[in-house]
Image (cartoon, rainbow, N blue to C red):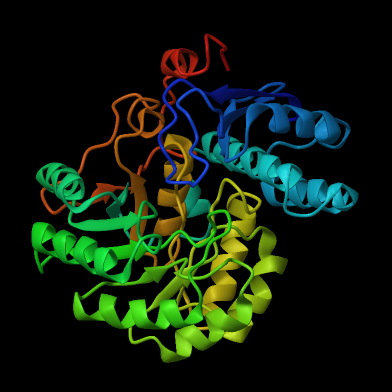
Amino acid sequence: MKIRDIRAVGLRGATPEGGWSNEIETDDCVHTLIAVYTDDGPTGYGSVFTSASLVKGSLGVLRPLYMGENALEPERVSEKLHQHTFWQGRGGSITHTISGIDIALWDILGKATGQPVGRLLGGRYRERVKPYASLLMDQPDILAENLERWKALGFRAFKMGWGPFGRVSDALDETIVATARAVIGDENALMVDAGGSDAYWRGNFKWAVRTADMLTDYGVAWFEEALHPDALEDFVHLRRQSPLPIAGGEVLTRRQAFQPWLQAGAFDIVQPDVTKVGGISEERRIGWMAQENGVRFIPHGWNTALGLAADLQLSSAFPDTDLVEFITGSPYIDELTVGGWQLDGDGMLAIPTGPGLGIELDLDAVARHSGGQRL
């Protein structure tokens, strides 16, 4: 079963806010879907956290390397693409694009063998996982309304991030956290993401230590991206001093970039993004490395329904990965799969058992969100 073509379409028109200081607009494209076509077998689908123009340019570079390759060998093919494009820069658009290709190849392998990807990764430790509602921070009254809405829909874990947090005053930071805890109750999990990868982030080490102490008082489960994403030494010291777990890693790509952070003890929880790091093949290796260094692996998932499906399969294959990120209110999550997503009465999300990623992509919905372009 050989690769005969790879196509990409960018999603736009309903792009959710990212919380960035230079905010993205609804018509901006930051998510691109990939389709890998084979000569005599199924089509596989993947997702890339990069604009369509960069993904299509990357596919042009990669085309001589993937055309005619065996579509049933995702790890080998993806590594070939990495190895032969180092001169384009490791970790940028090329690596992000390989992520989507790799996800699609695992989807093909699962469809060809009739197995969910999680089983092909070594076995399923669980059949359902707890999704945490991931939403942006806002002024306390608006935030309270948003949290009430997602709590009413059945979520039992919540992560709030970016917005004014760490950007106005310590007093506002605490009011935001206190409001969130009061709304969701003590029985539900609360996580805080400072958004330290934002442009010109000003939260320094002393701010992070002080804030970690405050978050502990409200029973926050982890403190994410508290510092600038290049501040390795500060992260190491913060983890040693913080009374609550420190999380990060969403901007890193490929296992080689994660290795020094994990070995130095910078994180309690590491959060690679499958649509950036190199796909399922690379994220699995990062997850193994996390295990070897005593770090929890919980995927970052600010992407699409295909990214969520990949995260669900990965979560099934790791014994300690019992949470996945679920973006609230994004049509690129809610509308791209046939049947959508449903929480059960315990606020849990079933991990698809069908072959491949286990979901059916709604190609008409993709066309609606890509200006009429079709995969």
